Length: 630
Image (cartoon, rainbow, N blue to C red; front, side, top):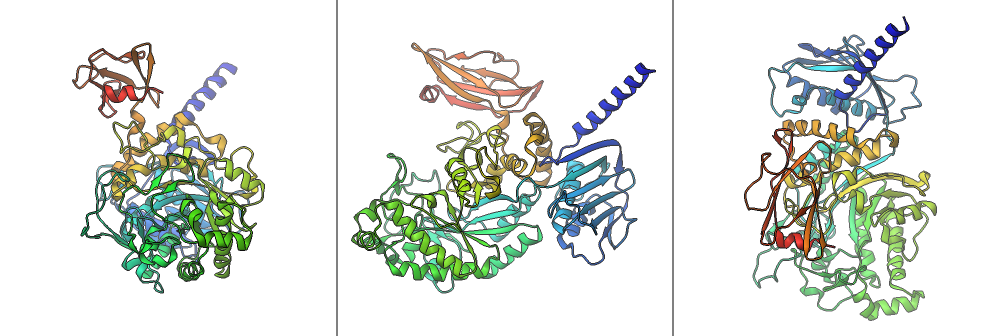
């Protein structure tokens, strides 16, 4: 009898394990109990919604997606017999909070319950992930059996701030493109869209009281290639590239995001990164000749060879000793505060060079007057005055972690981007912090080998992004708002490339900021990510397949060079050639570091899973390989 019971238990355990293996949800929920059997979507689908709740976009999303299955979809107020029931808890479930939900799938129906509408929206997104990948298709789909595995899910976020930043200054994205980016964020329970609106390369927000910001500052010379390498401008080169968002555009985007339970955090980056503003209003600069400045188009303007802060080749900073600057900022912040309901305004504060301030008689006079001893203290003087302006509009100031230098007020919050150190330090001193460290969260970095990517000075593989911990050891968790990833767009010219840079690393960050730390598992995440590649294909979202490409490193022993190829994920076979031909699975399989033959000129690499070619053909010149030796 005991043996029989053990056999039954083993069979049941295996059944549950198989069921769980098939369920791929990103971000991983707090609790997922897989059952046996499936729910099959009927031809007539009813969505039951609460009597007095306006679930607008949530029900609209379900109707839009499910109608592509061929089913007829209707809403029913207050119906408990509906196919899919959206339920607002009459007695709040304390465990799930304002953004959590429970999702029950039985063979007969679906029930999504939450304390607030946001939870119902996130539950609906999870339900859609349980359906076959074809649910993401942009067109009606035939021939699919629309089944959902039986399961009980309880879910809620780890942190409250779950953000993605899109830089629209370096390259401009239309309102519709920004909407698409927001839609894709919402699939994975992000709730903050950080809108980087101003920089040296363009001022993207209409300020009605300062019309030159968009008449002049939103337009630049149009160059294509590798940013920061462009040659000097021709005398009559037209400023034909750019664009900006009107007040009406912003109101539309704010509402669009709100319907998806996403807040928009605006960023006006000052006092550095302000060349577009200075080109519009040269009197904002401390430096003579600023009236000859123009919006940056991608030419080098900073010397980073001596580390931070950089040495500016031209002065891209607002003058902290000029009263006109504070009048300018008051006008800007007044309109920003009116347009964006979110309580924070991000004011940048990063990478402000000091060399022009050091030579400025105005700044020297300010230092003497205010008893300021260092350039960080000069910037802190600027930040404190700016914070008073921000506070006077009923908003709170947030900036990059440089605002810590020289001292900041107790009410200022910061984003820790230069590693985790500054965020930990700020949280310990009771400043609110959003963790966004470069080594985990800068998704403008290359995600694969430089032979397959736009060349950037650093790399962030998917596995490293997945290690992101928004509440790192040593931080005061009470003051950590959450975390986010940032997409800077110097070398991102269009939305397709923005998608490629965001996904799948955006999946890794989403799971890091939503899921419990003990639920994160790299191998499980890889399996889920590969399933989501099918969903991205159906949704026509571009993504990077870099996880299939090995990490390439080179070592020198005496006069010989050896190439090591390290796969990022398990289960791949690597094949190579040095004879200039394209390898396939009948070529030598990589087993140990490769000695570069004496006269070889090219290494080619491909990965397979079994008999299926899965990676990209990598071609690397031997002369470039030898440069990789550390």
